[in-house]
Image (cartoon, rainbow, N blue to C red; front, side, top):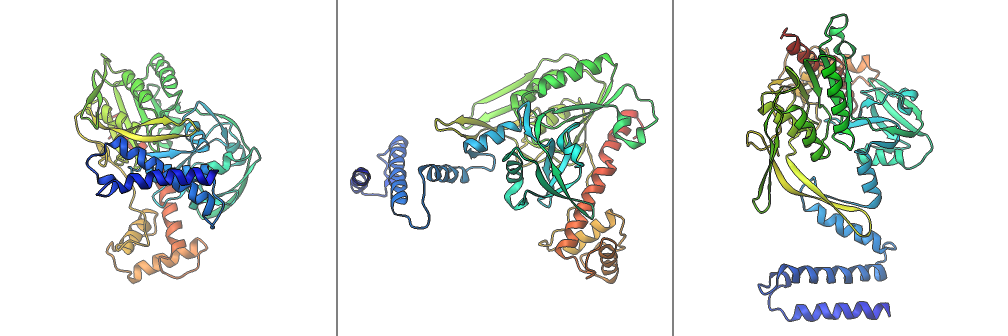
Length: 459
């Protein structure tokens, strides 16, 4: 009976196609709805054929449905995606007020590695000894080849402790990390003397440091509470650290903007139809005299829009790296069978009217590190020299020639760090060099030092 039903559907499709004198989807007499119906019928028939006759593996309707949805997502922009029910749970938990896990924040560095950017206080990760700057090699055997999402999914796959391998400088550590329900705090406030060595012992009661990790469910409430407390404490200068903030909910970001961005346009959006929508702040007076925002290449999406609104309204000085450049907005369509489809519906423009997408937000004060040495780049040797100089292994020249001085510096670096001494920039050497560069950049925190100098008038 099943075969007869599929055969009947195939016969109907075949008859429809024969009635056309041109390729089916090119027929001018067909509406888009007609074409969609035909496509759905053909996909249905193909699924049945594969389930019944494909010999490579047993296929289920669920597998074929997922493949078809992923296929549609693959021709869209990088920010559109299909989520299976489990994918959706993982995605939503990142922005929820609490989640089950180990209590770390992870970001991707320029080498594609998974770097721990923050360890939550009182979390299983803190108890196990994980530290910011650790590069995750594997989680229960799952490596970065599965992507950061694959590693995170592995952590959530079981209630049992996970074996996590990390590199810390030249060390490789294997840690057993338990799991628990962790409060997904996204706003962290501290005094400058607790986050910057040069501020220790200096009286700056009117200054604060705030880190916003993402714009999640509870972020606006956390920000509002922090703002009330800072006003009560007489705070006049604030550093807002958005490094590694990949964005989140646009409406949450807008709620926060209305508390700190002076009156005027926060952002505008333009849809496919050309309809433009402007989002406004009615704030009469900014809550702080001076604000510095820290950004890096991973400051993305909603956090870029926030940064642009503050920069364009002259409410903040931006310090650090040019942001990621994601200036488009998505909507999420829930599916009756579970899961969802996320797709781009509008482009975002900053207060000034300029684009963010593909451009990013350029800081007022640019502070960054050298480009990572990439074995596939034509300028590999000059990149190696720049990184070696940055981490203190001085090389006199900066050209793209592997001269004797460069070889000597490479050999010394390899010997000092327990690597085979080849005097050549092999993959292990490049990885360690780049990791040490990132570690030095983040530990020295020149952007935060510059922010402090601006707030204290010593820049």
